[in-house]
Amino acid sequence: MKIPDFKDVINAHRLIGGFVHTTPVLTSSAINKITGSELFFKCENLQKTGAFKFRGACNAVFSLKDEQASHGVGTHSSGNHAAALALAASIRGIKAYIVMPSNSSEVKKKAVESYGGIITYCEPTLDARESTLHHLAEQTGIEIIHPYNNCNVIAGQATAAKELVESFPQLDIVMCPVGGGGLLSGTALSVKSLTGNCRVIAAEPAGADDAYRSFKAGYIIPSVHPVTIADGLRTSLGEINFAIISQLVDDIITVSEDSIILAMRLVWERMKIIIEPSSAVPLAALLENKDSFYGLKIGIILSGGNVDLENLPF
Amino acid sequence: MKIPDFKDVINAHRLIGGFVHTTPVLTSSAINKITGSELFFKCENLQKTGAFKFRGACNAVFSLKDEQASHGVGTHSSGNHAAALALAASIRGIKAYIVMPSNSSEVKKKAVESYGGIITYCEPTLDARESTLHHLAEQTGIEIIHPYNNCNVIAGQATAAKELVESFPQLDIVMCPVGGGGLLSGTALSVKSLTGNCRVIAAEPAGADDAYRSFKAGYIIPSVHPVTIADGLRTSLGEINFAIISQLVDDIITVSEDSIILAMRLVWERMKIIIEPSSAVPLAALLENKDSFYGLKIGIILSGGNVDLENLPF
Image (tube, rainbow over all chains, first blue to last red; front, side, top):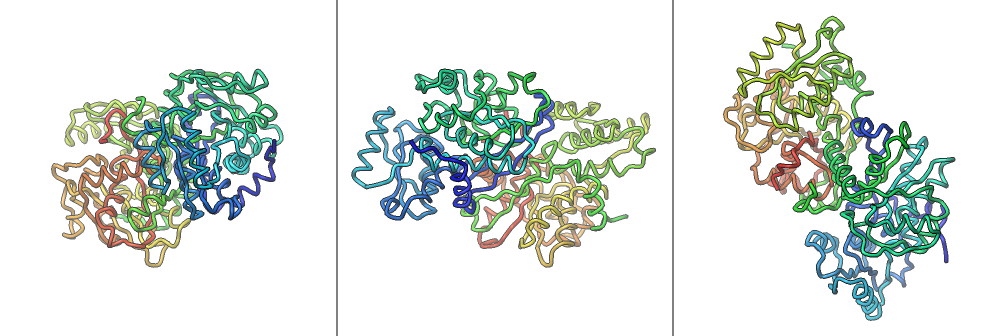
């Protein structure tokens, strides 16, 4: 199994730098006062397509050789990776085939379509998604881009933390949420390569704590029946991701659903930015564990801002 | 009547620079595609207290001589100036007395209180607000800081456009909303001093078009019974503001309520930032007049992000 290293991250940043937003890092005295720590929010919710996923998708699509790219790319996803892959493919001028469950929200369908993605609907099960995608790949010759268990995707996601710690080298900790582990493994690669002793801590919903249990057990324990509002974090860890996470990540903390909603609302009200529930999970962990983080300088990667405004949890 | 000039703006920026956020300038390919122009959004919704008003309040409070400041400052306001003045005063370590109408929203009361403002409630009429404030000033000796008809406030608000055009000197137009004229007069001062031929265009709700009518008439026509969702733009122009606006502003455009709500939602959905209705008015003007602005580089000052999440117009 090939594992990406920091050289891959540097190459990724060179390749995608002209296409992704160098997202701002925002601070909030009001939230610092509440948590007792000093927070630096890396706003990947303000990234193109509204999530960090665009970094990895760009790196994966732009890294393909011409003959690999010629028939287009594809994935199955109901979320941010689908929109990210569609836009990355359209920039390269190739097709993106997206397999989506038939019960996907209108907002998500519209996003993929607006970036030029070609949608194939299937039954809303993992089996149906995978078989539909593989059938499509056999017919069309597309390259399948996995949303997180892919070296180029990981190296792309790593550029967010790279920008963060290059601008704020004095951080004690960098935090991000963990679902499949694409963002977390990339973040760990960048932080551990660029800093002396900055810790990397992930946060995960208690109702979808497979990464926490895998991290403690030392092997991947799949996510079964996850229950959380943080829809981006319901997936199981990938193998490449877990290899990096188990080596480089310092800790994983689980949080309650109430804390996630509280943290989400706090960011909306105090910072005037829109984040999706998954983005709020690291701040939720700080709210639940103020004493452990008192006085520390903490970078938080806000992973995305794609929410349905008709259906807010508050 | 003293009129501030660009030297006052430079001095203001020096005085408040360490206390205000240098807010980011964001772009959105999706919104550019819709308007046909190239937009640069100066995000004063991400300013401390959630609005540009903090710049002017800081400059006004920090510019007071010690003996002027000793008894504190005061204003009557139900909106963003109240919170801004309360925080600016607390930074200087003096008291801020805020006269608020008794029917102010809980959100606004909480904001002023959270910054340490001392609230006096009065009947919800302009007469009651002014007489309550003047009575308070007689009792306490506070300095009254007008929300916009004040040279130091104008010079402070001007620093937002100064940052914008210093970072993006190639803009063809800078746009902002107009209510009392504090932001617009400051914006015009900075843009006309720092650029060769960048135009300054304001946008105003058609249901509160006193600035538009004043601008065309050449004298101040007060706002009577304004009807607009853009609650920050219901006030009448100040005299100092009008003197600058009539001399330096190129045009004022009025827009419908539907366009304001459409523009507001577009920014929320596509840019993942929270703006209040007043902030959406310039983009609404672009949506209503795409042909006139086709292909131009346009800076837009997003004035604030203070909305009641329980009471959204969509």
